[in-house]
Length: 221
Image (cartoon, rainbow, N blue to C red; front, side):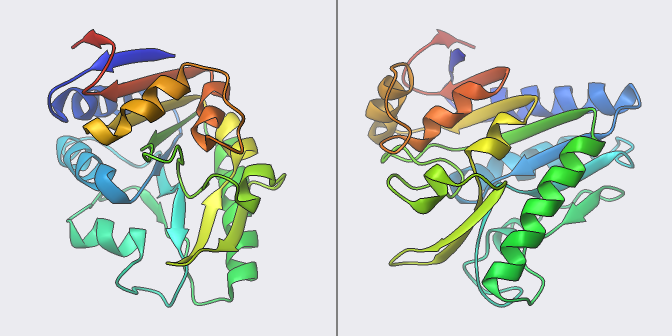
């Protein structure tokens, strides 16, 4: 795990755009997982930098989604597109297709596994919440102990569908974007051996290459 201290999003945008451009220029098939929340603006900025890149070999899907009708206002995919997240030429794979939550979760798990296995490089962009969650894997939730590549469960706010720790571990690389004083405890805990049930973000440490861009600790970039 590498901790990189930043003052704004630009270093993580540049890192991701450069990585994706290099992999695609080498003719590799790439799977890129993107989140909702505060990292949406990073994903959008990366997409802008890729506008002159041949994206034929790029597949994009979510790390997690909020269940509901296609296009509902709380959808991560919908919020990404509302923020002008466009990647012409890439294969875009939304999670919601109008099916029930169990069918949607099963399909999402299959897509994650199939596209990951078909790609030479699989990279995920993640955030970490102040409570230690990442993707849609909340502390103490059933997703923490799930063995399939995707899980669904109810929360007071949303019905959630998320990739799981086994799916995270299958990635080639994870890039994390964490900003704000409220995330310092979570960052400190990430450097310790904290139980997964307490801090699901610990699952990111199973990925072969993990870079955490944040404004609290690490070498300045």
